Length: 354
Image (cartoon, rainbow, N blue to C red; front, top):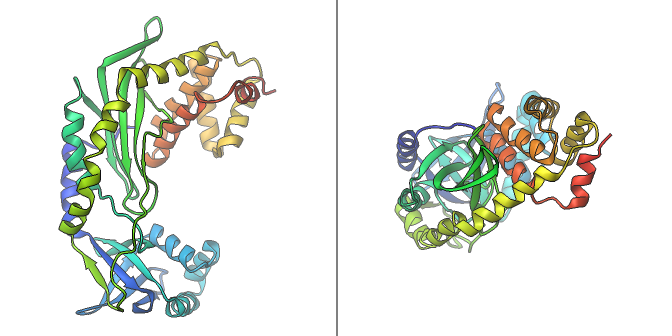
């Protein structure tokens, strides 16, 4: 499992962000786009006290292009080669739009351009609500926590629940809670299998809690910019976070853990009878792995020497430890969970690849 930061570091950064972030509900006509000669983009928002300049993160830039239906490749070409043309395009479309958008800002940067119906489930409030719940789990250990530009992750293990895959090969139960404040996914609570022998983490494809970020439209019908303070956001979300307790307990229940562990154990009986190189090529094609990732999974499979479905699952989850990007590493842990849910026909295409 990819390592992250400490709980103390996470708490400090969440506290810092709480003081620095601000949400705006903005009529498009009150927003102006700027690009300097170096290709750095900004948004000028006409707030009550006058115009305020914000930088724009790469993610928010992509979301803005999508909102205005400008192909992102063309958006980037204009930004790099014709910044004045980009500003004319963006501002023309902004002024012609009769809608409102949520701009989520942090440290003076617009980090997300979202619908005014976007349901904010913020990381500080989530952590404040669920950390006490997680800390009540028997012998809980926070194996990996992280706060990336797009998501927060809490991955913890409870060693009391154990299952032996084979003699000396033990997995423990855990849970993963993740959330995005910037429109990059739902709030989710999912079971986790943690393999002791190699510190692999597998996130089971359980959809017991998938809270989407869609709600009623925010702000009024006037043409002003509405600023939402953090105390308003916390009050809005607290009622929902109270529901998370039961879902966390279900995710680390004996029944849920054994069901996932037994699915993983069944892959021991799936021999890879084809060419391992071709098997990984088929895997890469199915799940859109790039060449570096494909080579890394193959290297893990060969090094482990377990030419079975179980070996392939563990090659995928083990490779996550080599991936620098934490979000992408977590996707490999989730891919392991998808593999144990494959049908016999789907496994056949992998196991017999030649």
